[in-house]
Amino acid sequence: IRAQIEGQRASADAALASYRGSVLRALEDVENALVALDRSKAREAQLILAETAARNAERYARLRYQSGLIDFQSLLEAQRSLLNAEDARTTTRAARATANVQLYKALGGGWGL
Image (cartoon, rainbow, N blue to C red; front, top):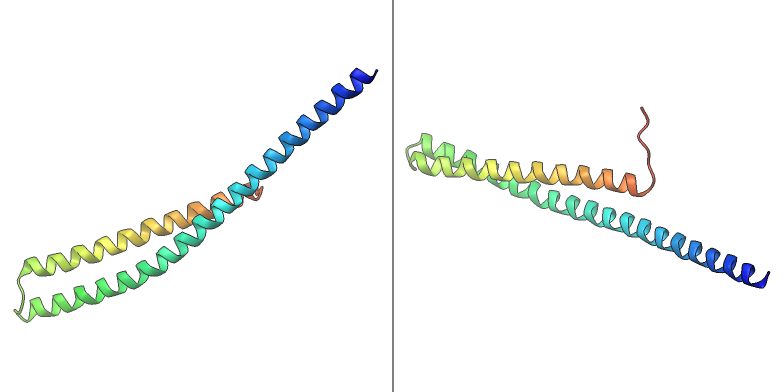
């Protein structure tokens, strides 16, 4: 009987260790999702500024091109910079959305239809 009791205690200890591991993994998932969300928000704020600056530079280059002060290649370069800034911001918005989904899943959210 004592051997059975010890066996059951060992099984209970193993189950408790497994539960603790699951809880730690869940906390790690939440922490990782929160960090990813925070980083993507900070990156997007930086990219908003960069996109605004690129948009202003493109407008200025267009005006200078229309005035004959710069060549078409310079205008194209300003437009390319603007498109790159817009692309980077869109990519970061997608990363933020992904981080939101990861956080939702890590917190145990379900998808109700």
